[in-house]
Every structure is written in structure tokens, then in C-alpha cells.
Length: 126
Image (cartoon, rainbow, N blue to C red; front, side, top):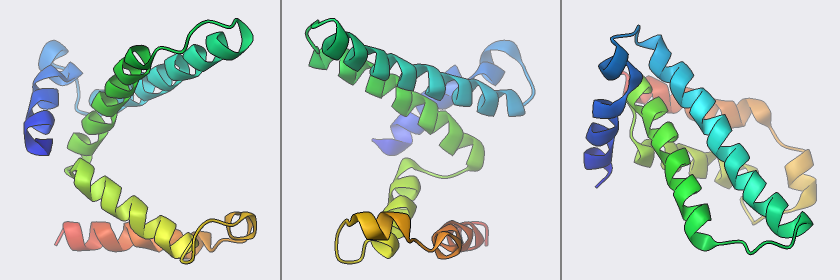
């Protein structure tokens, strides 16, 4: 399903629609990701501040739009969503080997965490 989604998103990118420079896809995806995250936040704001119902269908829609934007960025980098998930898991396992703690969240080895992604890219590009 991930490959099918990746191909579907490729067909809908800005470059395909507007014949723009490839960098525009990354910009489009980045702006879209911020916009969709703000829409999720707005749903929670309305639920908490205005006592409106928090509808799961609305959340799922915005999460799907966010996923679309993430897939656009993955496509630009030539990676899969699975690659993204696995490298993120590796980072969090490094940060929290025995589970979450406030102390580990504050006192983390950012260089070692970044190395997870550098190593992935090194192996991915070989």
C-alpha cells in the first residue's frame, strides 16, 4: 500500500500540475504540512475553548492530508514512509531505551540521535 500511495502522490505533485522546479514540491509539502497541522490544532481549540464536538472523521481527514504532505517529502528524498517510521523508531529507542522519562527527554544525546539519520542516508544512498 505504501508504494501505491507514493505513486498516487507523485501524480498529484505541483511539478506535475504546474511544471515547476522540483524544489517546489518540497516547499508545497512543507507549507501543506504546517497548514494541516494547524487544522488539527484548530479542531482541538474549538473542542476545548468553544465546547464543540471533536469529530474523529474531521481529525482523520486532516491526518490524511498531513500524511499526503509527508509522502510528498518522502518522494522528494527518495525514501518510503516505512523508512521514515523505522529511522524515527531507532531515534526514540536510542533516546528512551527503557521507556519515557522526563529526565531522558531533557538530557538526550542529540548528536547520537542525528547520527541515526546520517547512517540511514549513508546506507540508503549506497
